Image 1 (tube, one colour):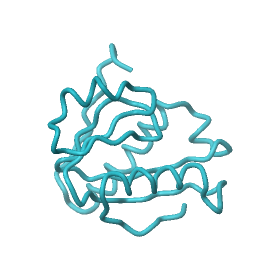
Image 2 (spheres, rainbow, N blue to C red):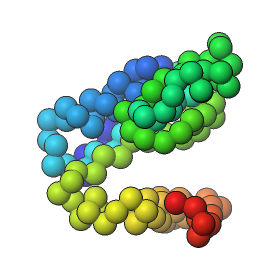
Image 3 (cartoon, rainbow, N blue to C red):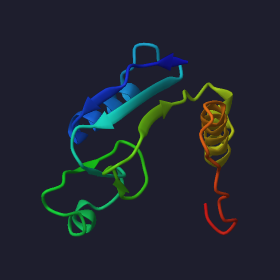
Image 4 (cartoon, helix red, strand yellow):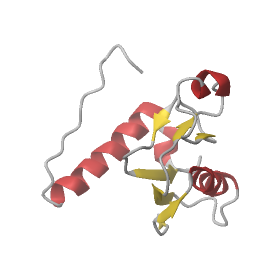
Length: 129
């Protein structure tokens, strides 16, 4: 796995870096992990979502930036953020979205517990994807 240095950038710069990480990485068969932080409060939203819908609920002084991935509106007012790119050839990619998310979250849980942090995984309700 390639672990990139943590960057502290604007929302536009962070989402641009993630897009490059996804589409133009020099070693595309490697897993890429990019931790990053926000130099401003921001919200991001998924590639297939309607900008007008979210612009109407996000305060006008806070940047709203489209992500190159899916999903709805995400607040980045006070969060810990990372990008993880898993190539299509990797077994975790082939395992499916839910199993991949579970595997990644369990690995994060183990790392945080090893640092003596009081954390736990919240089970996903069976009625939700």
